[in-house]
Image (cartoon, rainbow, N blue to C red):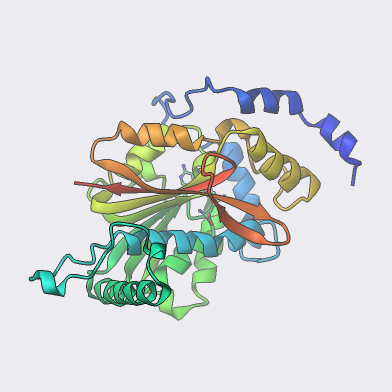
Length: 318
Ligand SMILES: C[S@@+](CC[C@H](N)C(=O)[O-])C[C@H]1O[C@@H](n2cnc3c(N)ncnc32)[C@H](O)[C@@H]1O
C-alpha cells in the first residue's frame, strides 16, 4: 500500500474539498431532458460487483452490515406512526400516552405504561392489512430479502438497472423457498414503472448518490406511494466528513469498498432533501437520523443527520 502522504497527493483533494464546502450547488434541480437517470459508468461499476454481492466479507460488506440498522429504522418508524387509540370506542379503553417525557415518572410506573403501549402496538401491527413494498435500486437484494421476510409485508418488488446484479439477486433468492411467492425482481428504472402500480412502502437505500437526476428519480417514486404510505431513503451528505469517511478512508485507505464507488458531487445534503420535500404537496419528512460506520464497531445511529450518512422517512399524508 502507498504511504498515506502519497495517496493523498494522488487524489484530487483540492477539488473535493472545494466542492464539499460549496453550498451553491442546487443538487436536486437537475434538467429533466434525460430518460434514464443513471450513467453507463455506474452500471459497469455495479455489474462488476455482482458475483461478490452476497459475500458478507466482500466488497459489499458495508451494505450487509448496514442492513440491520436500516431494518430497525424502517420498523421503528412504522411502529411509532401507529395511532394506539385508533379503534377505541370509549375514553376508558384509551391507552395512556403522557404529554411529557415519560422518564419523569417513577420507574415502575413508566415501565408499566411502556409495556401497555407495546402490547397494544403489537396487536395493531398484527391486525393491519399487509403491505406492498417496492425496493428501488435493489442491487443484489440485501434489503429486498429482509423486507420480504417480515410478516407484515405482502410482497416486495425489487427494481434495478444492472443486469448482472439482478441475476445475483435472483440466484440468491432461490436459496430461500419462503421468498418464492413474496419477492420478484425486474430490470427497470423507477421512471418506467407503470403509473397504476402503487405501494405502501418504497425504499431507496444507498441509491440516490449514484444517479444523475435525483430530482426525477424522487418525483417518479412519489407517484407510486399510496395515501398514508412511506418512502425510506438513505444517502450521504456532501461534506468534508463524508469525503473523508466514504472516499478517502473507505475507498483509498481501508479499501472497504472499491475505488470509484462514490462521487462526492453526487452526494445530497440532508437539508436539501428536507427543503425539497417541503415543496412536495401531501408529503412530510417524518423521521431523519444520522448514521456512522466505525470499522471495529459497525454502523450506529447519530444525532446529526446533516453530517455524513443519513436515513430519512417520508410519509404521504393524503
Ligand atoms: C450501492 S447499490 C445499493 C443496493 C441496495 N439498495 C442496497 O442498499 O443493498 C446501488 C444500486 O442502485 C442501482 N441503481 C443506480 N441507479 C439506478 C436507477 N436509476 N434505477 C435503478 N437502479 C439504479 C445500481 O445498479 C446498484 O445496484
